[in-house]
Amino acid sequence: MFINWALQEINLKIVFYGPGMSGKTTNLEHIHQKLDPSLTGDLVSLKTKEDRTIFFDFMQIEVGRIKGKKPKFNLYTVPGQVYYASSRKVILNGVDGIVFVADSQPHRMEANIETLLDLEGNLKQDGHSLDNFPWVIQFNKRDLPGAESMEVLQKRLNFFNVPSFPGVAVKGEGVFDTLKSVINLVVQNVQNQL
Amino acid sequence: MVQTKKLKDGSRQVILTGKQYDVIKKVLSELATKTKASAILFADMSGQLISQRGSTEGMNTTVLSALAASDFAATSEMAKLVGEEAKFKLLFHEGEKRNVYLSNVGDNFFLVVVFDVSVTLGLIRIYTKKAISDLNSALEEAGDEPELGSIIDSDFSTLLGNALDDTFK
Image 1: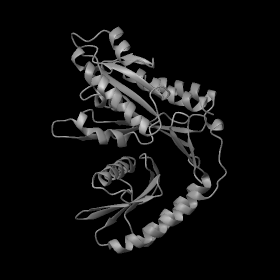
Image 2: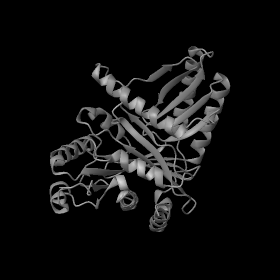
Image 3: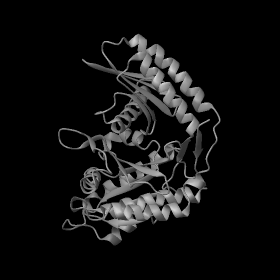
Image 4: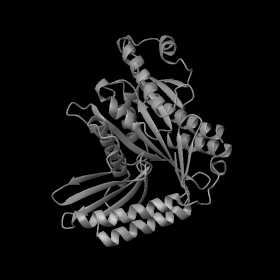
């Protein structure tokens, strides 16, 4: 969190984390597309030729002034592919809240778990831990035939019982609920620590 | 000192006071005048733009800061891989019309200087070095530190929640 007292700005960094092709970039694309252009900046994507995120996607959103303060949210995604491990680590620098975008397809369960462990490992290096850090889960791709049941996903992935949301990011379902929830958690977290 | 708090969960909270912000603006203006740089940005290592000077119209400086911070982060990983124990202190990108000079300011901040190829790198280096030392002193100075509790109270979170509902309608 970065606060510029002179400009009364409060800046929060939210990172979308998850395995490759789980829909992290799609979440940002939906937010970018739906929000009033006056509240959102450009969506920058560093992608490979194959349209996979190589470094990160970034966009900033605003919600106007609140009690004279101007909150700004910097949204980042990380590349999901296993071999981009260092990119994921560096993007977590200064993170205030995390959205874990899980893939609901049964054959991606291992990838979800592996990425969650990778996240925990990266957070630990910065002195964070998943059991006391503000984060939420989005179980994405609920519309796909054969998607794993919510019950199984909760049991296997949500072991800290954080807020979770079913999502169909390509249609925008669950996208804003997830984002709102993580922002609320970050703000609550700040209050709890005062 | 810039108020930097480590919260219980490990997250970092940085608060910049009005006085520090004024000094930063002044240092950047001086650097812009002396180097004739096209644009100068001062940002936080997490990618947060703090202040900018020069002809930045038409330049998306929010994104530029995010990219520059990642540039630093990526090169510090590179440093580890090649056996350099410290972080690389400066990065230089050479173009046909414009060059970009990036230098860290302490561990948590950095400067981006965008300049025309007609300006010599030596000049940029000398004045940037001075600016960095001025910025470091300003950041180390004690400020009237505002209480975070006066910024984010329970009222604030309710109002923010309502604002998010309106925005995400």
